[in-house]
Length: 291
Image (cartoon, rainbow, N blue to C red):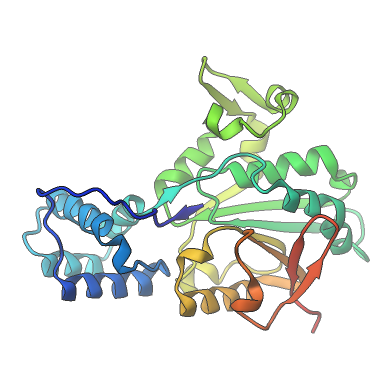
């Protein structure tokens, strides 16, 4: 999932740093626009990326650049900066126990009382280069016995336009595939060369990828009536207020009794009291109560 990078401890004398006031102004601006929270520990990385973008657009001062970010009608420069400020560490079948929980427990509960042919909606929020939503699709096909009984809609989103383009293309190297059984690689991928594989067209077309800023209410407003949401290892990069706001947004996006899966180090109980923790044999999910 797209998220701020770890601290870079190296230093380069040719990189001009932001003043303390400018750094604070930038962090406040980025947090308000994207939900991403940078601390003083990330100062070098922020200085580097902002400096690169200032040079690219030809702004001479940080204030001039910040005004460009704030007031550019197209939002193009903000998107380019966000693409530079995020990294994406993921692979197929990451934290597979939650995928097992999805097909062994959660979905059977979701479809109780539904007629065959009715829809089931799943959202991978912060999907990065697409390994998570494609993993969900493969798990459904391989392990959910009711997969053909319902109209399954898979959505995936990220704030980084570059990684979404890669997700739609569906080309991966061995690093992304290392946890995927080789028979599934053979079944669902075409080998392009010695180092790259492309996921089959049918799966690429089965997922609706979209550019979404989780901190923008206008962009998340259309995301409603989901049965399951995966948002793993992303909210740890938000500050406390950002996590509470995101939890409220996900609550609104879920159908009654819908589930959300967080990363292994995340706990919804620390963000919101709206959800009920559900302990299944494979994993803990958080459920929106029936109202």
